[in-house]
Amino acid sequence: MKTMQEGKAIIKAYAAGTVSKDMPVFYNPVMKLNRDITVLLLNSIDKKNMQIALPLAATGVRGIRFMLELKKGKIKSISFNDNSTEAVKLIKANLRLNKIKLSKKISVTNLDANLFILNSKGFGYIDIDPFGSPNFLLDSAVKRLGREGILAVTATDTGALCGSYKNACLRKYSGKPLRNEFCHETGLRILISKVQSAGAQYDKALIPIFSYSKEHYFRVFFKCIKGKKKADELMKNDGYIVHCSSCLFRKTTKDIFNSNKCPVCGSKVDYAGKLWLSQLWDKKLVNGMCKNIKNLKDKELVKLLGIIKKESKISSVGFYDLAKVVKHNKLKSVPKKDLLISEIKKAGFKAAETHIRPNSVRSGIELKELTKIIKKINQ
Ligand SMILES: C[S@@+](CC[C@H](N)C(=O)[O-])C[C@H]1O[C@@H](n2cnc3c(N)ncnc32)[C@H](O)[C@@H]1O
Image (cartoon, rainbow, N blue to C red):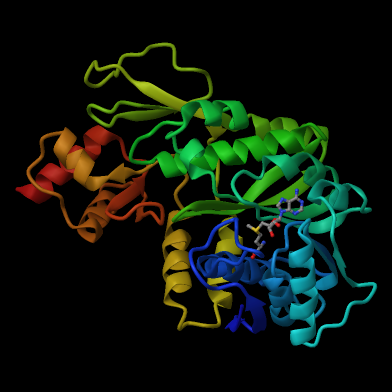
């Protein structure tokens, strides 16, 4: 066990060996970014007096950071929970280490996460940060999520969502994944659609306000709006993305694609979905988060948000991997990303890099137009 600092929190955690779910109490230093973004987002949304639930709290680091780093007036209560007795002991020790006393407002319980949530009267913020899939907690979390509440969801089963295990994705997420260059985006969108279906059952519309894909995980924050009509409207944004692996043509559709031939090259196409076809971010929130980044030394966070800020202005689904576009369309060479983005903009289309994959461009431009621009740059 080691004592270390993360953000403003000092915590004891198991640090030796490899990070795995077999650790006596789980702590992953790589997920500092996940916690940094959560703190930044909660400090940037227009919400005060939150009743915060951490059903899978592990060392308690996330909640302790909330106590020490969220602005005054943001927190009404924080409820830490974990079904591991070791974790609960460590949460209490870590609270003491940070001079935080248990009270009516700060509680620690040792329950199964579903019981913990269902036993409560409800929360304004619920953070589902599990090993693997968040599915086992979605139903109870959505039931106890208050009006305008925020639901944060992490999924680390990217193998299923990105198409390495197609049947697992169909079974767990009711969506067909597609293993291609933008499989991390389709995986993220399949996850969003799944969480929204859990909400819709209870007439709750879960609108994604901030989403990202990083290394081994996806993370999405949803804002909950109550109402049958809102939930119906939201579901209309589900659909499919059709993709040709020969020429890289792609097209979104609300109905299952009824032809399996690529309209550009005639090859057989494949599809992913059902998945969320609308916005991944609330642009105003992203701008606010960018303004609120205090620790400019944190290069990873600054870089990620800088890219997402530009990316959030473009509503297209999927992106172009430049090396693939060049290879599959037999073009001469891969243009510089920045030059290509500026040429696409000159041609009248929106374009930006994407945080999901390097050397790739998010743009609503059609493939035909894009190849013309690359050919012109190549001349
Ligand atoms: C990935 S860790 C959580 C990490 C933590 N949120 C953080 O930011 O460091 C998952 C935690 O969930 C706990 N857990 C797993 N299944 C659970 C269940 N059904 N009920 C309650 N806790 C559970 C594990 O003991 C583990 O501590």
